[in-house]
Length: 141
Figure (spheres, one colour):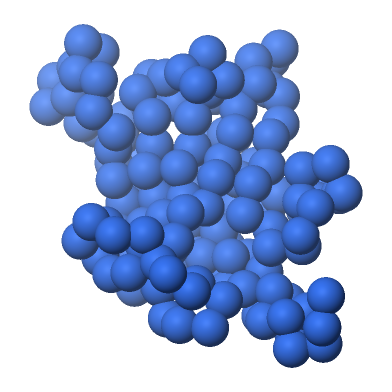
């Protein structure tokens, strides 16, 4: 791998870390608890819940939304730092997995051309792209 590619991957990893760090854990948890208690979202609704930020978005699966450990899951994604050769072979910091109360959860960062998420980014290392973090339970995979 040449030096330019290494530099671009490092820059990509920093942007991915910045996006995860921007996750408003307390606000998102409060909002989801309110929506569930007000019955504005139901357990039978299998839609992903989306939180949009200035630099990307988070998609949270139904199993995570309805988990008793919602706050802990979101905080773990935000603070995740256990990247290694097995889960991050290219150094982009775009995938992670962890366990909470014997349940395994994943997060994955995907790159899109823009906020519409119709087309994947052609060259996400060089071009600006819309980043989306998807958080889900391993049983939903």
